[in-house]
Image 1 (cartoon, rainbow, N blue to C red):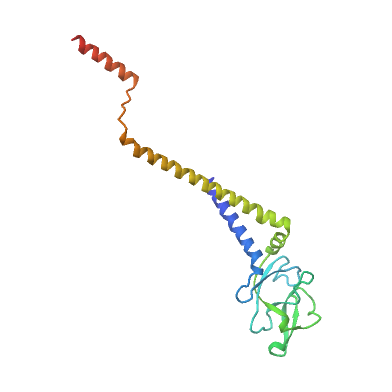
Image 2 (cartoon, one colour):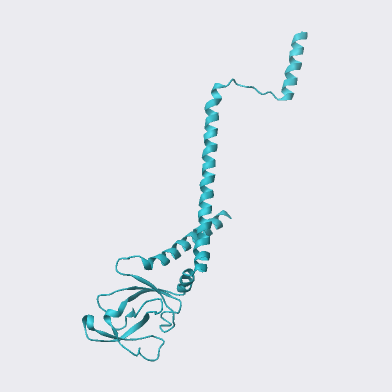
Amino acid sequence: MNAIFKTFYCLLMAAVLSLGALLVAPTLPITGNIQIKIVKSGSMEPAIKTGSIIVDRPAAAYKVGDVVTFGEDTKTQIPTTHRILAIDGEGPSAMLTTKGDANNAPDPSQTPTKAVHGKVLLTVPYLGYILSFAREPLGFTLLIGVPAALIIIDECLAIWHEVLNVRARRRALRRVKEAPGRPPVLRVPPRERAATYVLDLRRQSQ
């Protein structure tokens, strides 16, 4: 039972730390301008499913076949993640023709290279649903706040038990140090005391 509890506890701690890292990572100045984004549509299925998270990083150059994220990224606008079909021009002025794998036609307008956030390096299916829920007040409370509170309480209890154990060991050592100075006390069981008394009476009668 203890092994099952410890395994569950370790998994819970790992999940809370991982989810917390995913929430904080997009706000940190990570080397290489790595960005974590949530896919909101199925235009890139089956390669990238709706609800996945993607990891983007800017590249020195892009080529046909790369999956890139581009467009405005604000509270009201969501960037697009599509595959490059063609490239017109070279360098920073190049224009990209993009298309979602699940779409029947290319995107209606070309995308300038400077509007590209980066190339998709990694995708994790469905994790975006959890991350999106965790960004809401209720989701943050249930997925981060409550588990974190349980972990903190458990650690505090473990520290308190350790303090009690240290105090108990100190008291035991103190008793051991004080014991040699006390006169030895021989405790004789009742039956042995009676037998000794009878033996003394016999000796006296002789």
